[in-house]
Length: 439
Image (cartoon, rainbow, N blue to C red; front, side):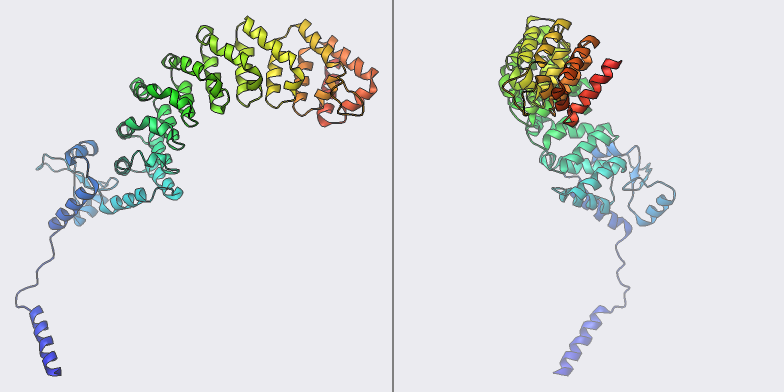
């Protein structure tokens, strides 16, 4: 049995031996053909290779022959991910990327979802990589758009293309890929960031601006009621010529009550009032004044009222707003945001109106008792964390005679004077008052 096995083993070994020479390995040309075929299948699945060649090469042809590669490397003919040299015999242009780099970028794109580290690597390649690396990244991102734009970290990679990539053609490719998805992206928490970057990129580019507006104009009402869409609308108001955005004013008027309750809704109203002439926004101003109480006490709503008080032309509407603010002087002054509106209203008052406010401040409010005695409105507001800014503004606006009358009142009523000094806010008001009188 052992002899039979030994004989079979010898026969097998003899089969491997031959008088003829062993077959030579595949030639370099054969290897090149295999690699080229694989790359074309892996990398160029959507576009004809001739189209890619025109974009990448400038009358040069690539060779991945290893011997030629190192010769070209020494002569600085290697650019990015491939070796380039002239080939007069072939009229066709070919681009054949380095397969390892192609696979590396493919793996980065595949693992980009939710991956901050990979996102930063790709952003760095877009910012400082070779043109061929940038082209590869854009091509592979196109295949997973618009989903990747909605990813928590993927959106930053796409933003970087419009922010830092030097190739305008690549930016145009990505823009065209996203074109039909602008509305969908605008309503996504991460996609809306890409849209804002696109709007920034379109500044000074009339055709791109028109393209963005044409995709969104029919859906403006929907975007106004969307917390993410509001960001996109505000960015357009900020970036585009106001004549392009006039169509938005009637839509905002219809949606005023909703927008006035939203942070970015208020910012949009404020931006419109800020940049359009009175004849365009008269209705918006009337609605703002009618809702002054709610607007004045919100973080961004108070800016709407401030802008009307500061820049709006003298009118019955503006006078009415001033009266409403003064009527609720105490309640608005002790509110963090409304106190800003009160300060702005004080700046619009005449001397006689300021005297009326002074008389009210030195009046003892029987309904407000924060101390063991009934303090004046002046002392109560001066000691308040928000209202003290209103008192400070008032002291700066009044003349020295009125300042002196306040100081005389405090000296005459020492209890008031001492009460004013019980808080840090009150002490600062005291110092300011004394300084103003001495001057």
